[in-house]
Structure formats: structure tokens, C-alpha cells
Length: 59
Image (cartoon, rainbow, N blue to C red):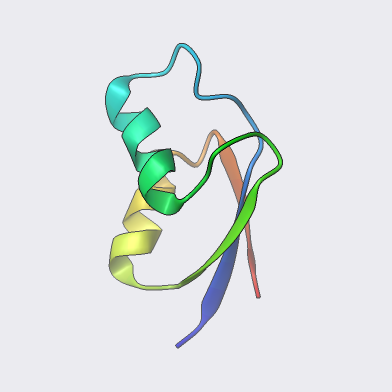
């Protein structure tokens, strides 16, 4: 399965609660934090919800 790297670029402060929880579920804690996930439909959907706060690249 393909891997995807997700990096948080913007803060979760003043964001809706569902976006904060999505970042937490992805494992992102602070700006600049990078995590690696399998590119499953669930993960890709979560990234789509917060795409304005994160950047992605294939690993």
C-alpha cells in the first residue's frame, strides 16, 4: 500500500472542533510536525477535511 507524509503547516487555533479532532486523529500535534500514514480512503478523507492546514507528499 502507498504511503503518504502529512505535515501540519497552520495552527488549529480558532478552527472548528471537528478540524481540531481530525488533526489529532492524524497524529499531528504542532506546526511542522510530520507523520506518515498508509494512503487508505479513510486517511485521504481526513486529509481532505483539513487540506488548508496541512501539506502532503507521497513517501
